[in-house]
Image 1 (tube, rainbow, N blue to C red):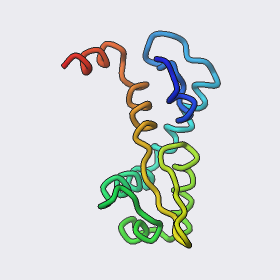
Image 2: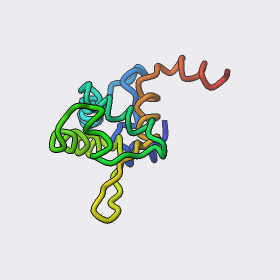
Image 3: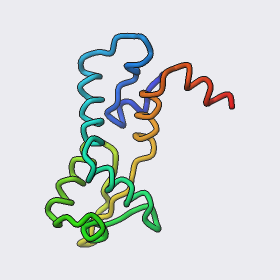
Length: 123
């Protein structure tokens, strides 16, 4: 898998499921991104952001649905941003967050065994 996306998304270019040994640095990067996914509140944040009317949301849009305080939501958003799963755009005093589809697609691709990838593309 050639990878422009790997550098941009912090995900390695080699899948741990390809049968090739994954390099330690690549494994650490992938584990960091997957760790960001591993928290239920962060998964809900990704879902809430993705399903928002314009595909973006501010912290104030996210606190009530999650039932979490603003500092806690901001903490989770920072972790998701650092993992490359969402991006932040500052507009005046507000910051808006949106998912990064290429990062999510790269992770899905890395975790899909090569035979399954070939099947999906030929359908």
